[in-house]
Each structure stands twice: as C-alpha cells, then as structure tokens.
Length: 348
Image 1 (cartoon, rainbow, N blue to C red):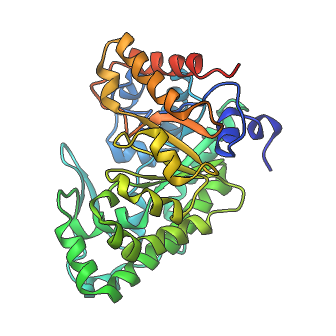
Image 2: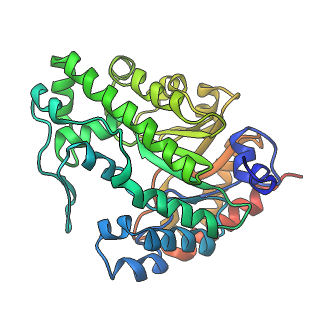
C-alpha cells in the first residue's frame, strides 16, 4: 500500500496520466560516470562489486537523486546478473563491458539455461532496494528495472555487444521451437525477478529492450511481442511499467501492444508523433537527444522546451533523455536540465 505522499507524487501521477504541478523528470543512467559523487564510489571497486554491494548501490542511487533533484530514483543495478543463476558465465572485463564465456551457440545449448525460480543468489538486489526505500524522501518513488526478453536473449547468444545480431537472428529464424523455449524461460524468470523488486520496495518498473530496434515489425510481432507482453502482464497489479525500446520508431505500435502504462520514446521520433502513435490513454517518457547535454545552456534550454512543447501540456509526460546520459556530459548541465524541465513544465 502506497503512502499518500508517494501516491500523489509527480512521477506516479504522470504515470497514471493525471495532471501534475510541473513535468516530472528523471535521467536514464542518472547514477553514472559523468557524476563526481558516483565516481568517488566507483573508483574504489569494480563495476560488479558495486552492483553486488547493497550499501554502495544504495549510496550511488540516493546521491544521484539528491544531487540532481530529480523526481524519481532508479535502482543502481545491471541487466545481466540475473542470467548468472540461469547458467550464464558472466564477466565484466575491464574496458570491454560484459562478456559471456559460454554463449548459446546452438539450439542444444538452451537445455542448460535454467529457469530462475529461486532468487536467493540475487538477494543483493533486493537488499539494495530495501535500503534505498528506507532512505529516500517519502515523496520520491524508486524505479526498479530489468532487461526485456529479447535483449537478454541477445546478450546470452552473442556473448556480449553486437552490431548485426547475426547469431541471435540465425537461431530465431532457423529454430523457432528453441527460440520459444528460451524466451519463455526468460519471460517467466523476469516476472519473478521484477515482482521481487516490487515486493522489496520499488514503486514502478522500467523494462529495457535496448536491442530490439534491430528487428523489423514483422519479426518483432512474431518473435518478441508475445514474450514482452507476458512479462508486462505478469508485473504486480498497480505497479506502473515503463516499456522502453530504442532504435526503431516503426515498432512503436507493437510496443504499445506489448503493454505498459508508459511508453519510453527515444530521440529518433518526434514526441508528439510518438504519443499520437501509441495513443493518448497511456503516458510517454522522453525524449531529449542525450547529446543535447553537451551543448551550451541556451541551446539546451531551447531543445528542452521543444520536447515539452511537443508534449503539449497533456497529462502523462515524464521527461527523460532518449537514452542514457554520456560519461562526457558536464554534471552542471544535467542539474540545469532538471531545473529547466521543472521551470518550463509548470502548469498554470
């Protein structure tokens, strides 16, 4: 049961498409390398050590919300550790990002991918959520998050990042039965993992399909939509889901079909057009080009105003970037952006 302060906070009111005093804002990757407070912690530990320490994950989550003055905190975690208890050998290699040493290379390899039924090995995530929720201001919601089934499957198959997703698409196209088995195991595992975040103290969830933009609409409908829809439908009732997909505005109608109370838009679509496409009965999140934060402040303000103007003052807009903030961005510009949104987004 939400407190009155949380129920009536800007972010959750916007997620319900209710009027707010001003446009709420948070920033994807808001606890990141651009922020000195984050780097002060990160310089002492590896990335995965930071993720696996509830105390440190809570510290960087809380400091980012406090320093920036944003309307929501997002749990500091990573998409991939949930794959480890499913049988994936994951390493965060210095300078290379995540590397999977036993990628799925054939349909037979899917037999060793175990469904995530017991969540004890991920307790560090839930302990971090509990600590953050205890220490956050009473009117600031905490967002949990997870990778969508396609993005997690792609990592598991490609073994890391990819430009063309050749191995993923080859398996998808040539053995639909194996693909279905993998995606169903991921979808059921994600429902358990997400709901455990909610039970620990998250008020909303963002589902990241960071790599699904590589797909055509027909392929998304056939190979991805049923499983993303299964995850969204399985999220604990009353918890808003932000369904975020990047890289392909042609998929927006299907993103809406997959479900969620808020559709996350990247910068490749005009926000007004994107909202019209997904329908005004859901909220939208976005969608400033992250590179805008490298500009001088007058230019940043003009670009911020353009996004707000595209929203047209309609209830249900949550301001964000179209993707995560870059490490090179001056932290002063991010703080200025938050103030600009609150100033320009005020309702008369």
